[in-house]
Image 1: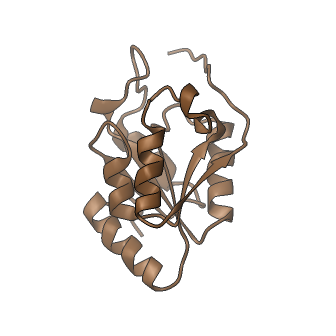
Image 2: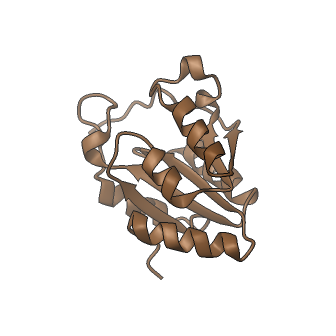
Length: 155
């Protein structure tokens, strides 16, 4: 089964799943340089719902500094799709998660604890994302996984 979908396809899939009474959880991010914090975040997201959809920011919109993302959007999508807890993945051609949230209409939208305080949000978009989730009938949840904000790597 191919877990990597277009956003339009995910909108239909998510709608069907919700009609079947399943709790759809959505996580969104860059997911470049996957680490234990990401894995714990996704495991927790899957535990609180039935279906886990992960949407990722397309390369053109990643703003994490020079040389980033390290892995292309297709590599990041494939990496996420390889995880057993992830049911579907989509690459989002936008600077934020709003189009993905509006398409998926998740029951629960998961973010890491680094987004819990809107004043500390480095993207400046968490309030708009929360508003989109609530407008679609969903709830926002934050995980308390270990943070890896400064990842050093050698290339």
